[in-house]
Figure 1 (tube, rainbow, N blue to C red):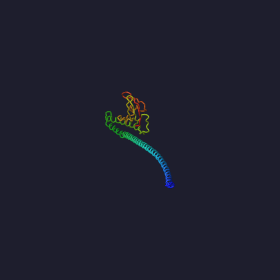
Figure 2: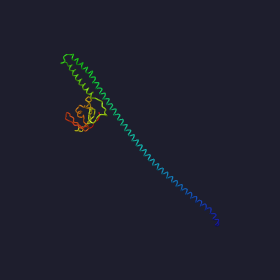
Figure 3: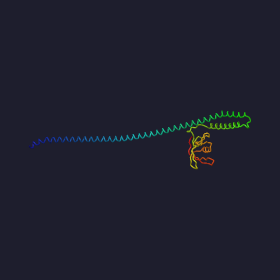
Figure 4: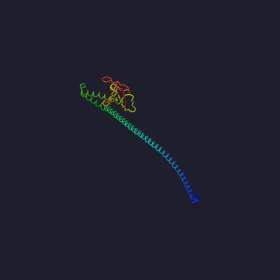
Length: 251
């Protein structure tokens, strides 16, 4: 094969190789461009994923914050409900106490009315019957009737005094700055540190076993008018005892 023929034979190959090389380079550039585009898309996706992750974290934090607020609010509601329940119980107890006092006052008035009407009438009849039996100086029935009359009048006088001085007080309006009737005082023996609580009541309500002392008793008199921190000097058979006022509450 001569030179000319070789050129004719190789020319197509050279042209093919050149064309193939051009196509290959173009494909490579195209692939690089696509690769770069895909890389940018991946970066965008990563940015979006990162942003969504932050949003998710923020959302979870917000949810936790809301849940915490709900928990705190529920706790406050629970506390308020308990306080309302306690207040309702206190109101009920106060109303029950007022009702009991009203019943006691009514009983005193009923007894007073009975003694002033039927009681006096019965005693007068007994005295009249005793007089009809002769000499009063040796009449035991007359003496007994007169003694009963004296006791009756003493009871009537006491009931009239109790009723006149009785009134149902609203505990919320009671002054607890000092010890007075219908207050409860906690006192401490300054000698031995022993503490005790007494309710100051009328003479008819006094019950030492129930820690209720009369305002006219030695302890009651010693405590009346005293404020928290004051020292009450109370005279007892063994001498004088000193008590510090620790607390004062409505009865």
